[in-house]
Structure formats: C-alpha cells, structure tokens
Length: 391
Length: 178
Image (cartoon, rainbow over all chains, first blue to last red; front, side):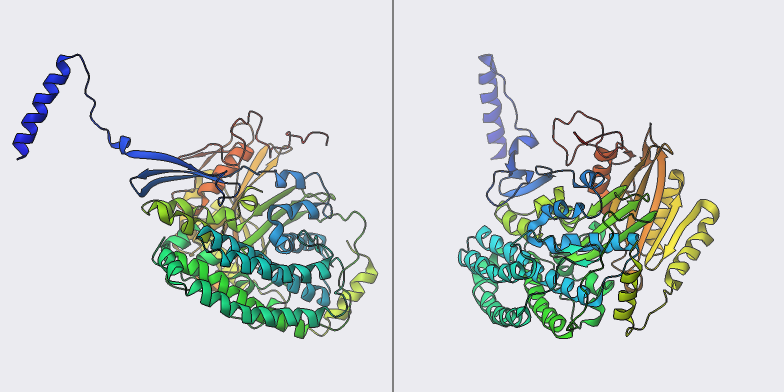
C-alpha cells in the first residue's frame, strides 16, 4: 500500500516538474499559526501576548506588556514624599489603598516615625475593604470571560457596597489617597462601624450564593479543573505570588509571614489549596474574601475608641540617608517598595515590585502545551492586572 | 523628622504594648554561614530586622547566588532593582531574594547587591540560578542599560517599540519641563 502510494506520488512529481513548476514540501513551522491576543481583545486589558498554535494546541507564548507604562518610578524622583501618593495609586485604582500602604510603610521607616495605634487599625480596615473591592472586580471579569453573565452582575453590584463604605471613609470612590506617611488622612465618620458590620454580615451570606451559582457550576468546573497545572516546585522557582502561589500549595501570605502594623493581633488562617489548577487559582481569592470579612470584624472590634490617626509631619519632610524595603499583601500578592533616600525631600530611587509583574512569568509556562480554548481561564486566573505590571 | 510633641503622643499611645528589642540572630546566622564559605568575597552592608544586604563583586555573584539558593534556601527573587549613581560612576543592581520553602527565613529579604561601571555596564545574568529574575533583568536592561551576559533576551519589554532615547532611569534622562 505504502509503496503504491509512493510510486504514484513520484509519478505525479515528475509530471509536475515537467511543466516547470516547483514542488515545496511542507515545513514543520508551516503548521503553526501566529495569533496576537490583545491589546484590543475585550478581556486582555492593556496587554498583548503573541501565541503560536499547532491546530488547537498552543506551542509558543510571548507576553508583551507595556501599553500603559507611565514611568511611575521615574516620576517619583521628581516629587517629594507626600506628592508621590496620588500618582502612585494610579497603576491599580481598584486596590489603591494597598498600593500606597507599603509606600507609606517604607517612607515611615526613612522618616523615622511611627503611626498611632488607631491609625494603624483604620489603615488595616481600609486595606481589607479595598482588597474586597479589587477581588470582586476581578471575579466579575472572570465570570464574563467564561461566559457567565450572572457572575459579572453580582460581584459588580456587591462591589458598590464596599465602594460606598470606602467613599464614606475616605471621601472618594476609587482613588482614595488615604494612606499617607504618618497614618491615614482622616478619622472614621460617625456610624461607620455599624454600617461596616452590616455590610460585612450581608456579604458573608452572599458569598455562599456565589459559591452555589459559580464555583459549584459544572460548566465552570469543567473549564477550570485540571487546566493549567502549576506544580509547587515550579511556582516556587518562578517566584509567583499571592493567590497563584497559594493555589499551588504554598501557604505564604505577607500578612502572616511578616505581619505589618496590627496584623499580628488578628487571628486568621492563610487560605491555600493543593490542586494547582485554574480552579484553585480562582477559588483561593474567594476563600480570601471570606477570611477578609473575618479579619475586618476583628479589626473593628479591637480598634481603640479614640486617639490620633496620624502623625503631623513637617511641610516638606526629609528622609534620612539610607534605604527601606517594605511589603504588604495586596489583592494580587506581595507588593513591595524599595526606596533609596539621599537625605533630601525627594526619593533618590523608588522601585515598585508588584504581584502582577511577577505572576506573568507563569503565563508562557502554563499556556505552552494547553488548548486554545483554555487560554481565557488560564490567563485571568493568574490574577494579572496589566496596568499595575506596566507601572 | 517629626515635632517633639508628636513623638510624645506616639509614646503615650503605644505605652501599653511590650516593646520587643530586635533580635537579629537569624540574620546573623545567615551571614556567618555565608562568610565562613566565601570569606572576604562578600561584604556586609547592613543588618536590620528581617533585612540583610551584602555586596559581592560581579565575578563572584553567580557562585554566591548558587550557594544562597542551594544551601540557605533563598529560592526566588522578589525584585531586581538598578540604581544609577553618576557621582561614583557606578550602577548598583540589587537582587531582593526571599524564601518560600524555608518557613523560618520567609520574613527575611536578602538583598544581594553588585556594582558595574556606568559607561560599559555588563553583569553576569542570574537566570541560570533563579528562573524568577527573567523579566526583572529584562526590565533592568531597558531601564538602565545594564547588559546581562547569559540572558537570552536583552531587549525591550515595557518601553514603546520605537524607543530611541537613552535608558530612562539613568539620572541624565530628564522628564520634560522638570
């Protein structure tokens, strides 16, 4: 059979060359098709990655971030320690309290000041609430990514409650500029504690419904379970952080590992899973939201009734010569600032190390070898915020 | 840098807390392990609670980094940061290392620093040791112009495709109007 086929092929080849035509054999790379995903893809955000597919399988992936690079680190060198706050929260406006949190901690170390106790509690409460806002927004997009419109509507609606709370606390809906070196900008308003407890209790019940409609949905489970396996060793080697790391079985949370401010007085568990797949990466943030409700209740309970919320600084404070490295746990993992001071009122060098930038290293690792249809569930489960990664 | 009145307020509000003196024995033991192996190849810059910084010459950085990973369990880099010092004519590159696998040293950020000449900036890449530095080193290359020998892709990452200026985090690059 094979011989017959080969003979007929040779014969045809001769006939073709007789007419002066050239026969080109199919090369290995001719099978591949290059696709550019983003930045105009509705789900990718301001981010592009190039993939090559062989049939339905992805064989190559090259992330290309930088569409919203603003040079935040350079901008910091031209403004003083206080002026830096409003533009530093731009990279991730949905988590703006956390991105200025570690900046404030680092600047406080350089200025040699300590935040009053009540101020520390208010900071922690604001950052917990803001983490909920971010995670809900992320979950809403994950829902619409996988074609589950209800999971877009519900978190987007419940997010408004937390935004209202934060608006009452800070005076702004998303970009709060609330954490400043020395404490928080203002004290909590009257009746905030009761209002906050009400919302948290409502939201805790609501989370059960999320689990029923989304996480226990067989369609969602089929699309995420055993998809994009990131084993523990790989997760450690790639240096991923946050929910991606905890979904691979490493119980690492900065709030627990290196407690800042009042987190050593709060009793909570680090939520992690050992299945290492997209489902775990989608479920760990959900467990974190539940734990965050628990933390907020304790913080509200333990907060001192009265006291200062900030240390009044000089108008143009000068840092002492040296450097500081501080990190906090944000919605996307460890978020750290490295600040070098030369003794002037402006930082000499600011380096922002963000969770998104670290997690994106796992994208080529996970996509290569998986199916094209699994791309959305793998990509968005990495908890990647393009604007934050670009800075 | 605060007023004396405010310092009094802080002391009052924190007086009910027990003040724990920083106990640096883990940091010191990490450094003593390192110095017993490498002698004067490594210089300590500072030790403070949960933070160590050491300085290593570029020719020794790979063996020191390999020792830190294999013996001390510092398994990933949180960030790679380059700082430009035009007065000393050097660019300092710092790897902030941390551990996920050893719980007792997980709070510690180990800063491994090295320096290179400002005019011809070449450093050996730590990519063979730490997979996690891949994009960080690429960012340092485009922002400060430090070429990492052994890194497969010393090319643009965050900057625009048609970027034709000097690396922007060098101090002679000025923002317009400032």
